[in-house]
Amino acid sequence: MRTLRIFLVYAFFLELAYGLVLSIPCAASSADHVFRVGQNQEDTSFWTQLSDQLDFTMRTLVYGTYQDVARTTQNPENRFLQIPRYLGTLELRPDIAFSFRRLDLKAKPRMKLRWFAWEEGTREGDEDREDDWYVNEWLLRLRIVRSLYASYGRENLQWGPSYLFSPSNPFFQNNGRLNPIIEIPGMDFARLIWIPRMEWTISLIANTDEGRQEFNSLQFQKTYALKLDYSGHQGSAGLVLSHEEGGEDRIGAFGVWTASDTLLLYTDFNFSRGSHSLYPVPDETSPFNASMQSRNINSSSWKSTAVVGASHTLLSGPTLALEYLYNEAGYSDEQAELYYQLRKDANEAYTDIETPESLVLMTLGHTADPGIRFFRKNYGVLRVNQNNIQNVLNLSFSYIYNIDDNSGLLHSEMEFFVGNHARCFAIGCLYTGKDEEEFGDLLHSFLILGVEYTF
Image 1 (cartoon, rainbow, N blue to C red):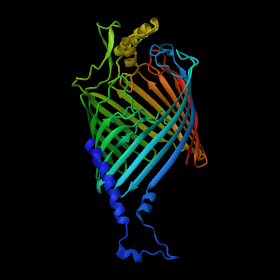
Image 2 (cartoon, helix red, strand yellow; image 1 turned 90 degrees about the vertical axis):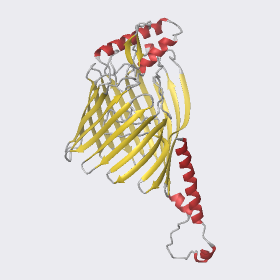
Image 3 (cartoon, rainbow, N blue to C red; image 1 turned 135 degrees about the vertical axis):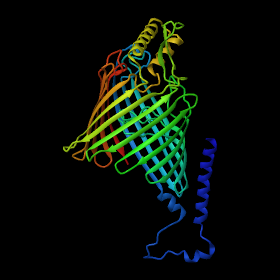
Image 4 (cartoon, one colour; image 1 turned 120 degrees about the vertical axis):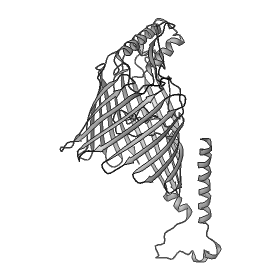
């Protein structure tokens, strides 16, 4: 991967030098290079070409967040996770793109200023501020020949039609659709892309570094994938084969079919083995008689995760979508019972002593992030959205239901556009679960209100 990075940087400067040479007029033709008044002569100089290929967009966001913290065994009295009640955020999000001949450069530097306030837990009454300056995404891409591209950079690679998440994506568990205001941290990728025909794309992808992603309980592992995409008149499909170093193998696929002008059918699934995800297992060596372990890391059996869905647009305007998720890698009833008992025992040990021991902290850390996107096996989603109401308003409502433990999440979004450059937005979530249920063991609800201006 280091060789690829050096090659791309070298190619960029070589192409730049080549353009400079071509832009210098020779002595024999300098006399003919005369500007005539009244003649519409295009300036094709090198520097003009450079400026014409630069694209710059700036988004400024100001928003506030309210979080109603749940008091559960995962976060006893908000001492462990220390979730703030109020947050105020100012973000500058410039997007820079530059194309020259066979080269494309992109960068998304970011500035984020945040204010926090706590009303419960060990930091009750505290306030804090922080500033963060970083590049969330950047990319250097070279067109080697007409249909072959090589790139290296920090990206957020997303695909798939599902609202919940894309099981066929081996790199990102979160697609950002539950909270589109928050940007997903990018990771570092090297890619080789071949487009043999307009309908087909073949990609070799190497995830070389965690970038800005955080892996709390599990360590980052390099992942390599072969991705095949097809895009036709009535639908599209993809096949993804991937391998994680020292761990998981995956076979993933997704597809979208336009059944009619108003009906869309889709699916997204994978088969995986050798997962690093953590599961509760009986453990006589632990004071809690159980521990979180990667029990499937050496397993040769394949587990499936699949989303199937349908989207129908009514004549009156709204679009209705239904999804079902089967997650074989999720916890069974027995595993869930052991998981919550382990969490309860670790919570009691945490609250009984003034300085928690490392085992207690590690256990609560593992139960907070066991490395699986959804804890249980069966989920349903109902989504309703309508866009362009009077050309200024977008509305959407979603309900995610955990069929195994009967907890749920009610999610709503609103966008109101003011002119061509500004919009107001509101995002709200209400969790209906209890302590020993998935939706509701960290928050009861949250609300985000803000304004975005683009120029």
